[in-house]
Length: 417
Image (cartoon, rainbow, N blue to C red; front, side):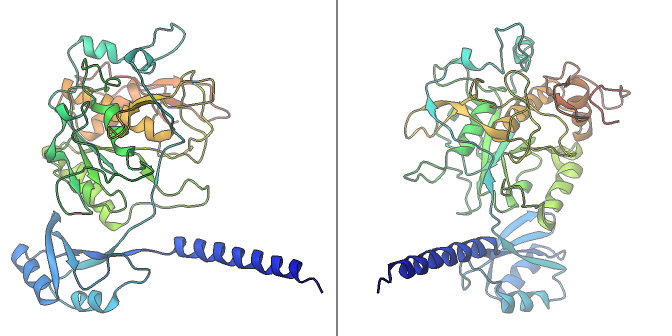
């Protein structure tokens, strides 16, 4: 009797079961050995509570929120550590606490092929085609605006601080590694070279000009740093009176079914950023919209197949498109000493917006976060090529960057109806 068909069926059943088990594991929360703890009584009380319950107080996150770590808890677990949580929660001085969860985050990238780019290939900065739009950065540069005095932090998988095209603009005050609890955002090199994403985004913003390496950043005299580990919200509150702009090119899975948003600590960081950051003018947060839909713009003003339509998307910059359209020049891992012309997805779009905002802030450092929103809307060019009633705007360098905070607002063709 031939049992091979039954054996084959058993094998496929086992494979299916393992696949389903893997999906179930990935869907579960991954709990870390750190807690965010709200202790309004001050740092001494926070230290006392930490010592009492076997925690190490890693310091302030912002406000009265402290970062606690417990050495007796594994760094990654599929279940929460309720006993430690409950004991700390019973303390009357603890108003709120949350065990931090390492959420799954996907970089807003497509497949990238490394090349040797040149400045003329940065079509989105300076277009030599009269029928093609660009970001008007040449006009800003000609007026002397290059991002000088503006600090941008790339919240990603780290940046190569010693990259020859970033080293001259690197700012340690805009950097922090949550994994190792130190200010060094240097990415961990892997055999697959998959921790180059943050360096690519940083290069789009502040790559040094006129040094013969790769291309040039939109704000090539801006200071640049990196917050390592986008799965935790702590870098969102990093040095809010030193960092002007936070740029993030990551988010939940682009699988068309995952809906996720900021939890309490991230929401608090956003609120504190816009209300207290930059001396009360408000931190600027730039986020990639995601690659699960169809609402961005490409070299020829088309909607790429991957970009997501969302009411929260105020405007968009350029990125990659179809096979016959160019992609974005950027910077890869310098351990391989290669650049690329193939940075893609909304990952490549968000840093361009951060660079443009850096130019505007150099022109007028008194712009509030609300002023910046108005400038984005008023200076974007409406694009009517989208399908259906949706409209989108392509960000240009704000030509009214010196607008006063009390100046009357004008209606814009990009404003929502």
